[in-house]
Image (cartoon, rainbow over all chains, first blue to last red; front, side):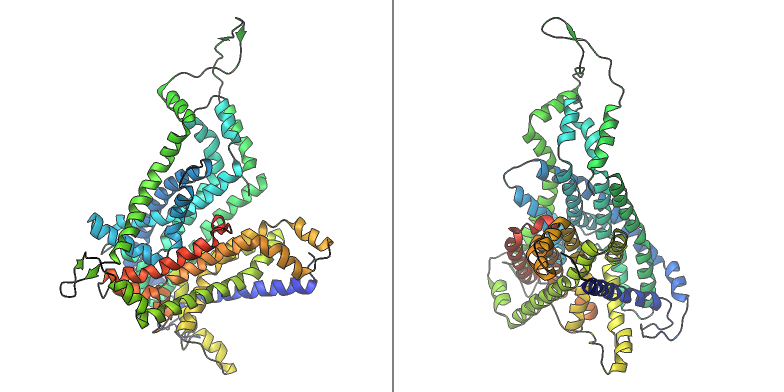
Length: 266
Length: 329
């Protein structure tokens, strides 16, 4: 297929336009974070640094960031272990019910968050009889984060095959040694990519969190939702938004470096 | 992006361990045979041998923890929710009565409010999915097949970046873009046009915006897997651009496209927060579930409403399973 110059240009223009639409709203938030208007009116009547100063002094916001990081780290750790185990089971074995297990892993992310949310809320409070706390949020997040680790690891396992592990076993290495020296190094970047996604998913989750967080547990999304509609807090939400987008450059850069490294080695 | 290339390095790492001093095994003929040393029979070694010889036990170890977790936390919770749909709430005490009844299901299936909202929700989810695929196809195609490798990496970053920006931040961004004195009104007013304001159109716009990266990425990955040689073969055989796209590219990319639609469709189906932020007075299924769990304290009715999206998603997943889309998620 040879694309004419016209169709190449058209495609480039369309792609560029879509990117512009994608970035305009984020740009508006950036400008609003400096605006003197508290009601997000455009064009901004004036500019101020007040909101930035207040955001960094806001104890509520800082505490919410801490809570979110805590939840995301533990949920990611659990998801890494469970997701890796289940990828090995599904990729290396054929057993009765394999497709059902596969569906079971995808389900927490395929079903709308509100269903997972009310199901877990009901499960914790009525069936288990445990009060909602930060740990119920962690359990809920880990459940739907498994799938991101699973997707990355199983894709890697499909590509690497078992030849090297068999060679390692033939050379006398035990199951553990083979995993440590042969399997794990092959999985490392897939685990990092899956872990990053799981962290981001947990850090950003609002719906399931709403239903599983105990009173007093305020993750960053809950903080943002609570403050979004308050006139004097709305610009602070803009500041948090800008900081989040800027901070997100780090994981993207990491992910790109990872895949870049791999391409170079290839 | 294969890791095959790193494998030799790791294998070398394993092989460069200091070799144990060879213990001279004696071959049947009596002559000493030098070769791989026999490992010591430590407990770890015995466990290792046992596991190697018994793949089912290995499978059991691998599956036990994840199945316990998913089974207990998720399957039990989901099953309990489904069961609750067949119970009712005592209107005096607000307690759940565990007597079987079809009342909630009948209410949800026949009530005009629920029917209207169900059709509205499906409509919004379909529209969002169509918009997202229509936007994702050209940009994903440009990224995968037209752009130079350098431009491709930059584009991937550009598409990924909004994905990491918070969901709420993006919905909130659209709230300020679409507001009566927002940037859209400011841009459109000179042309005599106006912002749609908050309502169903705003919901569709915002949801399409939110899920767009989730649709672009699988489609991009799918298109990248279409070998260039096939496109050249099609051109050599006289295929023009459109026939090539229709008969070569689209069939190969279909599972990836469907994988993308699962995201946009399912995520739209259950959303209620975007609707709260930009939807004005219009409700979706998620809002009905939310009000019944929260303010109305009627979990059985909420569970019955929740059955609608569950049934739709399961139907959709069953429909697309044969296309191999689930492997592209």
